Image (cartoon, rainbow over all chains, first blue to last red; front, top):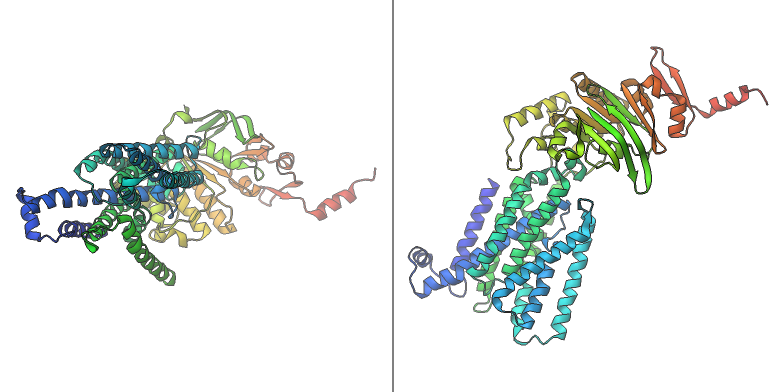
Length: 326
Length: 269
């Protein structure tokens, strides 16, 4: 039932994100444009600007939410962020470098995606132990490689002639859905789909892993296989979200906490709840980004951090105190 | 039945067990004894198939354990680890339900009627029925041990392997756990326990394995294996073997006074 509540909130966010932006569009006009698309302004705005952004926001938020829930469950660590896989930093290096040397805009998603997955493979190779993965080494390798990639980005930004590419690069690093359309979404959909199927396949193992690796293995979980499945799913989902929206903080780390507060720790509920809550938050935040300073846009990552983090800390600490007092 | 064939175990470069062959019977209670660090936990995990052997093989009902899938292995062998961990949010029932993992395919998310029956039976057998909806984190050590046992029973395996199920328990809680395990052997289940208390082993076990110094120091029934010599070799402590009024075997460490007394009684050389 909590899941249904979250779904209602997400649908509300989707509706709101379709209505507002640079110009407010009447719900009646939106419905008319959706049902009978005509070559007028409203139809163009709805079909070419609003809907793709709403859809991309939903996919980005859902991907990051699920990736975060997967990794926090696998590592039994609530501080784990999907960017820990090295995916975002790897993709960022490739996209910044690609933009500077003038790779065509259409090839950037593929470049970023491949670099992100390559970085995740590197982190996984460093964290390998026996047939599976070592949790501590995975976290250390992810953090270490991410800071190395960040340094490489800083070096490129300071030493290379960026020129006209600066706004695109900065928008990308700060996280933004600006200028994304159906083609980026089409590119990512298969990877998101594979990632989600792998995530669903990992649900029973995730539940058993709540008892720790050894007890999960005793119960019949092939722990090494579950680790690779979960890391693979999280990497695919994170790489897709990074290609769609750049590096958006907050969502992958905090959405799983919101989901667990709402539905408990059962992975059968936590994964869908994380997907829905992540989608709702990114859609709503992107609508706010477009509206607050219209016609200018605030970067999505910036807004999420400024509004989301204090709100989350407030609610989280309050509910922790309530639990402690009870 | 679980059989070890030329089993070798190592921890880093140290040999824990060199080429040991033995069998763990169905419907019998086997105790594994040995000093801390001898490799009892490693041996138990290897026998449970959750850790590969460093040499030789483990056979489960005649099949090489390495050839079984994790689920197939868990349907034959239930293993209870000794490590204590913090489990947030889970109820007793959630923990026990995890034991049903091996009876599900990955897409079978719903609890079946068969699962519910098995969980109810496990709660009943361990006397935990009234704790079903309690948070696991609020239980005492003895109650937690019962929950782990219930989870293993829910696996419906023919062999139960337990790592120190009576450590940290008071005398009564320990006796209750051991009696529960003894009752399982009557139902045809093979029970294998790592124990620290030699007298618990003497009182409850049909077969004993004594580990120490990188090898198997003894294998067989209590009368044969629990000699003062084998125990002194394993633990490096002087032991005395006696009989209780009922004739049961009892083993004790020699207290300093007794040692002095014995020394005085010895004729001067």
